[in-house]
View (tube, rainbow, N blue to C red):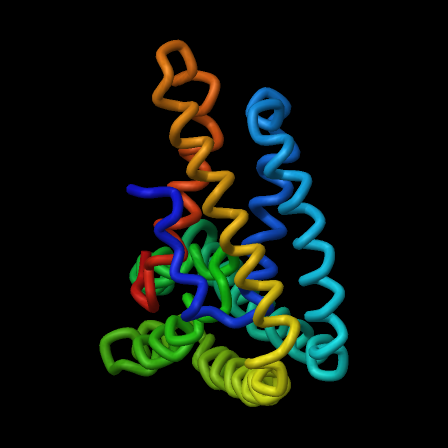
Length: 231
């Protein structure tokens, strides 16, 4: 896998900033790698600060409610997972324990949601609601008395998607402006840094030094490229 295999054009400015923030902290936290990319990283950090300021300016109004609503649907999912696991582990009725096991096995496929960017998980919440409503799963939800959680998860996700559309409208205001140009410069500096990391890692004796950061990058890129599929 190439470390520059990130299609920044398909994700929102907010999600690009989330990824760059993660990458910034990843490099900054690896002092041995940092020594080899310090010059490039200083320019990257400067651009990162400009993008952060520009993005917060254009998204100031809708961004707060957006992330509140994202936390809302996440909290429902986390709560449901906890209740299902409690039934599986400690319910005194074997029928409810078996039902909880079936539901938990489904929910396990969606544990990656909180670590994904908005674009990567936008269809997964809908997909989960659809599967929970499916007759084969719905009967088990009824057995453990958690049917109403399906409706709540759907409601919270719809609220998030509505707010997400408002954010998208604000982002469109700057499609041809300053933020777009800064984002492209920052994306390019990311590619310069990971290119240097890849080159340095091929030098004999550097394999162990770069293994941790390359593994982390490959894992994150793989997650970003799930593209709406359970992973």
